[in-house]
Length: 144
Image 1 (cartoon, rainbow, N blue to C red):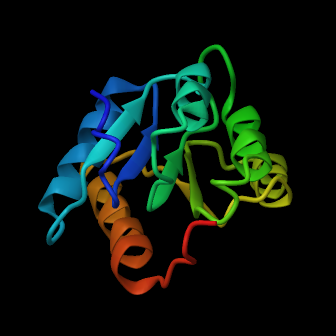
Image 2: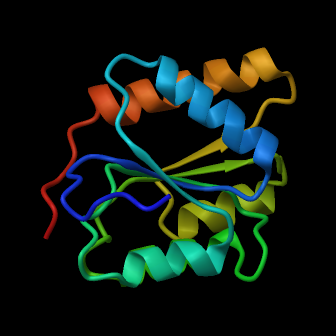
């Protein structure tokens, strides 16, 4: 469900797991004054969204690593290569606790790495904390 091009504050959620998507959307909806969310269910769809010239940069990107077609590392590399998206915060949200994935994410330009909790309640609480920080506390650079 793409957002209208005029949407000036939204979250780009890149997630292929329907349960994680639903929990993330629920947690975002429960936050105070939630922004609209665009969901890309694979890496290629996320990059296609980035390449649309009429789409403003997201307020924050919540990015899974293990995605079909193109993985999260490829999406992260494209975000950091794309001039309009370079300053957009990217939060990697992955079930992986592999130190290699954490380091690779940060080296590729992730702003944060959050391990997805297994329990639904913990997952929702984590998304709530992440969204509170990146959408309410963090001062974002103006899009360039």
